Length: 322
Ligand code: SF4
Ligand code: MG
Image 1 (cartoon, rainbow, N blue to C red):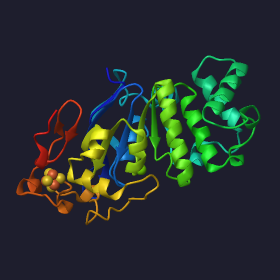
Image 2: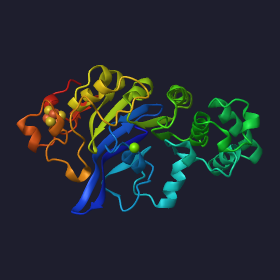
Image 3: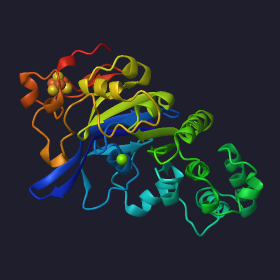
Image 4: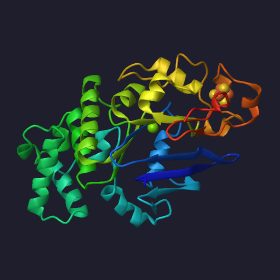
C-alpha cells in the first residue's frame, strides 16, 4: 500500500470572476523511504500541493475535489485539531527559511525536547538524550553544548540542519520539504541535500521534495513529478525523466537547469510565461509556449496517461510505453 496517496486533488480560490483552481486533478503516491521530487516554475502549484497534504491551505482557498489518504486513512476531511496532531507526529515539514520554523526565544534543545515529548512518550531526560542524538545525526558539532544555544547563534546551514532534526524527531512517516535549500549558499545546499537523502535511507521516512531546481531533484529524488499551471504533466523515475523527458515542458526544464543552485524562475529555452491560474487557456495549458502544439492541443486537455511507472499529459505521447 502506498504511504500517501493523493487522488484528483483540486484546490480552488475565489476569484473576481468566479472560483479559480490553483491546482487541478493532482494525483500522486509515495512509498515508505521514497523521495518524490516535485518540480516546476514558481506558481505551478508545487507548494500548494504540499500545503494541501499537511492541511495548511490558507482560507479562502479550499479543497473542492479529490482526496488525500495517509496509510489508508482519509486526512483531508479531518478537523483542524486532528490534523494538527498528524502534522508533526506523522507528517513533518521543512520550509525554505529555517528562521520561520524555529522559535527565536527558545533554545534549540527546548524546541526539540518539546516536540519529542509532545509526540513520543519519553521523560524529559530521555527526550534530551534523543534531542542530542538528533543534533548529532544532522551533523551539528558538539551537540551536548549546542543544544542549549539559540537559533540565532547558528549559521543558516546549521539552522536548516536543526529544522531537519525538528521535522524528524517525532519519527514521522512523511516529510514535506518545500525549497529546503533555496535560501542557502550553493556549497551548503549540496550538504543539506546529501543529509536529507541519508536520513531518508536510514529512517525509512518518505520525503516530498518541492523545488524549482532540477539539479536538486537529480541529486536527491527517486521519482519526479513535473508540475505546470496547476497540473502534473509528467511523473516517473528520475533516471528516466532526466535522460529521456517526454513532455515538451520537461524538455525545456532539462535544457535550462543543469546544476544545483541555478535559479530557473524563468526558462530561457522556452519563450513566454506560465499562464496565471485565472488565465489558463482551454486545452493544454502549455500550448501557447509549445513548439509541438497541434490543433487538438488548443481545445482538448491532455490527460495524464502512461504505464506502471511513467505518465505524461501530452497529445504527442498518448502511447507511452509501460
Ligand atoms: Fe505541446 Fe500539445 Fe503536448 Fe501540450 S499537448 S505539450 S501543446 S504537444
Ligand atoms: Mg513554492
